[in-house]
Length: 356
Image: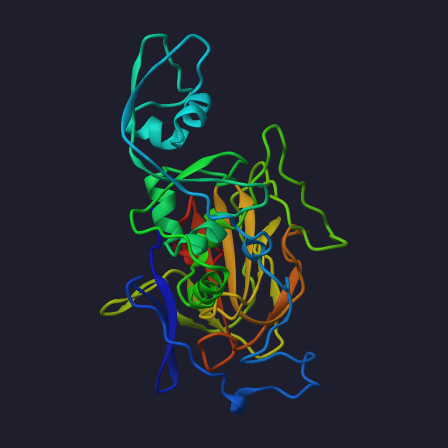
């Protein structure tokens, strides 16, 4: 599916239009405005350009990626007794997902001896333990959303060790220095969908994702299990004036959520029970950002937080305080950007929240 939009904040008179712009237009970096910074006595330190709490480093930077991609020529493979799609991928060097797409195969990918399979040509990266989709994309200077699309990756988007990912034609191995520069630039291009689909570390075969914990003692750096189900009921993350609604705001500008005015330091509450999938400030446009996986394909997002009280892998209950509102990221007044997504698609939170 790839990127949908990028969120931006724009001040027009007294009204903020917090919106999304097409992925082809990356928001420009903007230095924090000191004039809006709260004194240390106000809900600790952390305001427009500073976020307190959250994970110090995102999971996609923890494991360096070995750029081992190989170019595989197109060929034909004759299925033998006992063959599996993964085994054929390992023998040919092509990804099993790419082979399935090339031959219109569907789960459970039943093969029959003598069947002819087309092996698609391409450049394939072999996933190592702990690597993430975003990290792999950075290592080759490509867009992770495009990798998701050409490999038809699906929920829960946890890569497996030994998996072969087909890369875009533009993929080229970068030096460590180039990867670092690319990662910094990506802070202005990454979006919520990237984190949802590309931030989980790869797991070895027959290894299960870690269960969430109410209070992790240390940063969780492994893949995290999604909640089994979701009741489908959300509550307001905070009370305040709605300053930007869901959908089109102006020509070429679309808001993937809603924006609620809030005084600095206002507690932000989890809209429903779930597991924290991300808590940090590595996506520049949102500043302090928290993502919660609620299971059943539902995810909620909370942007512009000045303080983050939770960490990745933490189980939270409905109404639990997860952070404090602020004006971090590319906005100039305190507010909360709130999103709900179902199966990666943004939905209007006003249709899911109780009336007020």
